[in-house]
Image 1 (cartoon, helix red, strand yellow):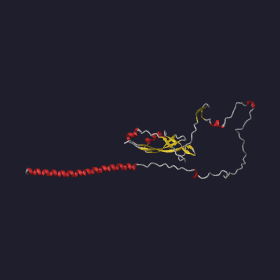
Image 2: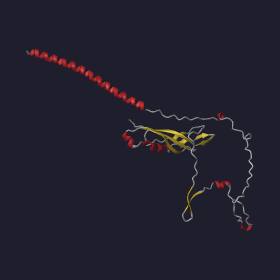
Image 3: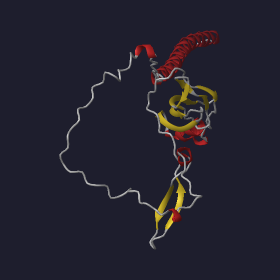
Image 4: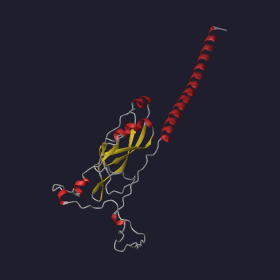
Length: 240
């Protein structure tokens, strides 16, 4: 084989190698692009399917005109009187006893109803030796309202405090939403916070602490403030 024939064979082989390289390079790029598109589409599809719809809080407001007239007090049926033939025993306590005028103190007075209402009864504890010790005073608080209270004006937040993001959840990349039910008193202050729904328990305590610092305009009913429950979502999302 001459040198010219060898050079021609080498050139022909290199041309075939180039054509083969171009063809396989196009196939490889097509496979790589398809794989990346499939991975990106799977990521967004999984995120779309994992999203949950936010719960909708339905509040029904009833007008006075829809309630109808109240029942008549004059036409109400009166329960018939029942005769009791059993002899009635005389009371043994609370019977007034006459006291001589000399033993009556002229400075003794009787407290009025207003003065009696301002006096708080203490909580007492009986000791072993028979003596009574005052432990603490009774704090009278309003009862919690039911979950649904018909109002004419809903409470509106005027001070919103964002919860602190737990450092452990931040490092782990955990996100979620916590729905908190806040008891708003007649002054618009948060008196109690209850977790209704939570994506992760690690966010419950920060959400409750933040909810207790919220301030609202009080809910109104009959031209007066009333205590109601308000549902507030606290979302924990990382800045990406």
